[in-house]
Length: 188
Image (cartoon, rainbow, N blue to C red):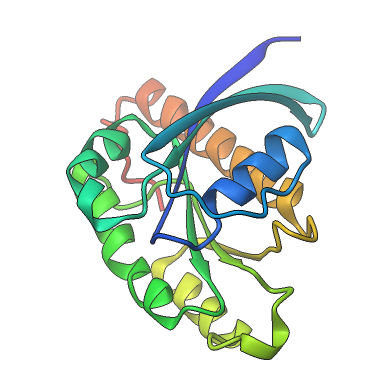
């Protein structure tokens, strides 16, 4: 079985649960305490649709003081999880800008991305409705998932969906190049 290798970037504001999602996926454990990340890398091999995928996962800094590092990780990513917290309206509102910046840095009109609404287990503090997340994802033309790193809700499925999107994107780029088109991220 050939391994497909992908660079996944987990991006979003500070405190939205990027590290918790990543550690839950790679190590099947929930990290209770919040320790702001500068940048961490994880590797995970998994089988999706009968094919092996090897992921290099970059858990990025959400704090504003590390924004200078953002363009670097945007350049290297093959697929992106754009994470916000359903109990933090500001983290949701910041997603449009993050999405736009990734497309600008990569000079693309489309990239494999999933909008991730995290912390759905905290129902009594929810300030961003499912409908709002679904509408934003539709506007951005990306997939949508609701997760809870704490309760391990839809964690694996979200990463697996991104793998499927990256595979499809790569396949379509190869077809475009084979057919003489430039294939520079313009697949919609």
